[in-house]
Amino acid sequence: MTGFTRRETMFGTIAGLAAAPLAAAAREAPSLDTLARRKGIRFGSAIAWGAPGADRGSFANPAYARLVSSECGSIVSENEMKWQWLRPSPTTFAFERFDAILGWAEREHLAVRGHNLLWHQPKWFPAWLNSYDFGATPKREAERVLTTHIDTVLGRYGKRITSYDVVNEAVRPADGVLYDTSLSRAMGGAEPTLDLAFHTARAAAPGAQLVYNDYMSWEPGNAAHRTGVLKLLEGFRRRGTPVDALGIQSHLVTQGLDTKASVATLERDWRHFLDAVTQMGYRLLLTELDVRDNALPADVTTRDRAVADFTRGYLDVTLSYPAVRDVLSWGLCDRYSWIEGFEPRKDGSRRRPTLYDTQFRAKPMREAVAAAFAAAPPR
Image (cartoon, rainbow, N blue to C red):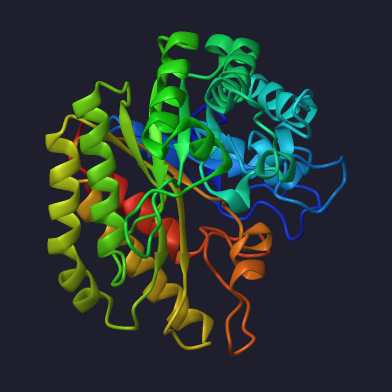
């Protein structure tokens, strides 16, 4: 293979369909992870659990698994570590699906990120937690419920996972205020709840990177969200909460065909935000990269080019910060992206938010990510 290992080689066309045999590459080129590592960055992707043979973005889908393992140096489970899937009741855990993902990743020599230990929004709590009776000593019981969850998960996986999204999306985007939940009400506030999550994670996994993860972005309408996140990060530092990094989800939304003008308009406020975060001593991760092709025409060639250009502009700005050491896409293939179901296009055209199309063919967005890694300053 011209000196490349299997992971250092990407396949321009993996397969026509998930169930089809894997096709040999028409060309060889360095994988995205190889390009990223040349600059001290690691590239990865989300992946899901699936039954063998299921047409899903799963490690059990041979075509998708091959794509992920050939392009990536790390993975994160799309859903299987979240409370709704992992904690079906106050007294039970369901580890089977995440265990299967982790086992596959280890066989493929892929690092694994843990996502997440506390998604601090009521709508993402399991139903039992929203209605839980915390009894006569609610603070003590809420602390027990939270610490039991974190200690159990980290106790099971130990050093097999070295980076965790400890808290996910605790800031309300509309006003920058912290969400109120059953746990925070029982504990007397959101801040002590989040602090306890991080202190518990540090004690249980002293060598792991502990991350606060959120979707504040650079598009218009995110200013209050960014301000709220900065306030939260400042509070963590002031109170001595052990938070190592900010996870920037990077669910991007295109602003029209003039991507150069869009990037120029958005860059100043985005740099202001990143400057403030890094000056507090936090590292950065891009944890869930994909792009909604809003305000773009249905024509696939035009759309793909604009998405690629917008992605490249965002990465050029954000990767200019040496604090960024990880970039993960939220899936690699349009066929399995969550965005189609979450926000379909009004014109009926299928969304094209990832690096590969529904037929597993590399798109201009893949080229844009590769070029951004090549252009990034070394860490």
